[in-house]
Amino acid sequence: MTVSGADTKTRSTPEGPDPGDRGRLTIGDTAVARIAAHAAVEVGGVGGSAHRLLGVTLGAQRADGGVRVIARVTGAVVALDVRLSVGYPMPVRRTAEEVRAHLVRRVRQLTGLTASRVDITVTALRRGRGR
Image (cartoon, rainbow, N blue to C red):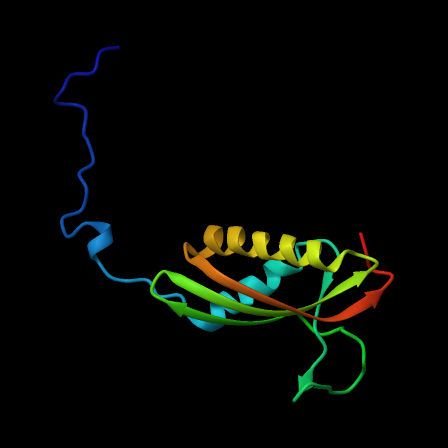
């Protein structure tokens, strides 16, 4: 079967500005913080941070809360302040470095933002939750 040029139709693109010129997407600090908190626990041996006030643990001494992240987005760059626990006997420094690299990669992948700074505070060691 032969199709003539008159029978074929091409779809035209809608008129209007280029997609990049139609508006802006802003990802807020809270959204980035939640994404980073979820990404942090993707690293083995990482858990939540106990609630603290002025350096004093509130409630139970367990680190059973979620990973705590404060994100500050400026343009296409984000700075992260992360508080987490590490399972004993995981190597703390190496685990923190893995978390830092993972957060830089995942935040970029999921938001398009560049993590310029990732400060990590290990607030507790949890017994028996290593890899």
